Image 1: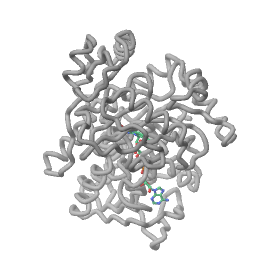
Image 2: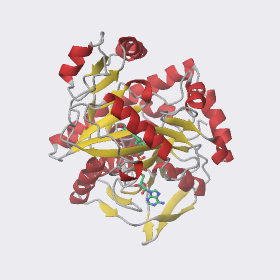
Image 3: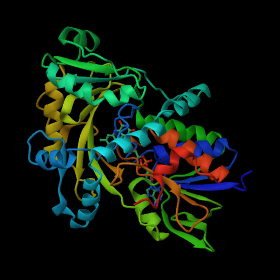
Length: 419
Ligand SMILES: Cc1cc2nc3c(=O)[nH]c(=O)nc-3n(C[C@H](O)[C@H](O)[C@H](O)COP(=O)(O)OP(=O)(O)OC[C@H]3O[C@@H](n4cnc5c(N)ncnc54)[C@H](O)[C@@H]3O)c2cc1C
């Protein structure tokens, strides 16, 4: 039996809220400290894809070459700019070391084991009547040529072999337009990953936060953690802008900021922010499916009243400054693939133009563990491009670890001292 009775969670993004859900479900007294509002940071303007098939590490074979080459291309959604922050160079070198076939395959298998139960937590919320909408539209890959579609489908063959719903054939022009009439005529082929789902990520965070408060979780919004006190190998309290909060146990789920908070406790977590962008297109002509626009790294998520266009992977300084060149590239790509994407919108006028920093690790795997030398401090972070989809499974697995003191097998690749 666990001796835990109360837990403080730093961070009310998707990962912190999902962790709080499972801790509360285990009857613990839970306090969340969030410097803004629930889901206000990277968990807000992202794609909201719940995608077991695409749960693969960011570092992969060919990624460094592609990153460097695309940094100079006009429509590219990828940019690596080491000169904006030379301190990132050692991190980039570590990242590059993981861009091998074997590292990618083992990372994919490890993420696959975690993502296999991805939907369970979302289904559980639905069973409880928590009004999180999780449309089951799949994830439609839209390609400009059949050759491109065939190539991209072939890349997913290992996921099919692992038992995921990956189709065996591509669709032709007529079939894909019948399924998704909002695609432009330039789209000639593609395939649908039929079992993938999506959420409106901001709505997911808000709804989950409201539910948690109803269940007795204390949620301190607008409250920043400024220090963590530890003694005798245990965290004892956190200092916040609203006063001190006692902590029997601590979970740091502060996205990229976890790096800084863990450093206060002597743990070096090698994380970098991978900046991405999104904007909203209010429209009566929203596609019905989430779309992955071929090799462009640009995606589209249908939301209430329109759709969100998302993309970009910029490894540079870690500000939220908007890079208009990248956003213009996303607009051009979306216009090429979507029939009714409005023309002549200047970047400044795009509604809900947003930037977020994905919490990235050099091996592309999350960090879900206790911190070294502290028996009651845990981290749940580093989910990179996958934090919304993996939020519930990560929260469930960490809670299991905290309650039983035995690390579940599924978490063994995600240790804090593996780097
Ligand atoms: C363009 C883009 C598209 C994406 N698309 C998808 C997708 O389709 N599917 C998917 O699964 N993932 C996607 N992601 C990734 C996903 O957004 C992240 O992995 C996820 O949001 C990380 O959640 P988090 O809770 O760890 O971090 P965050 O959302 O950053 O939450 C951390 C919280 O901690 C709070 N905090 C930080 N420091 C402190 C402090 N000192 N005191 C108190 N509070 C603090 C912050 O305010 C914040 O709310 C995308 C990301 C981007 C940029």
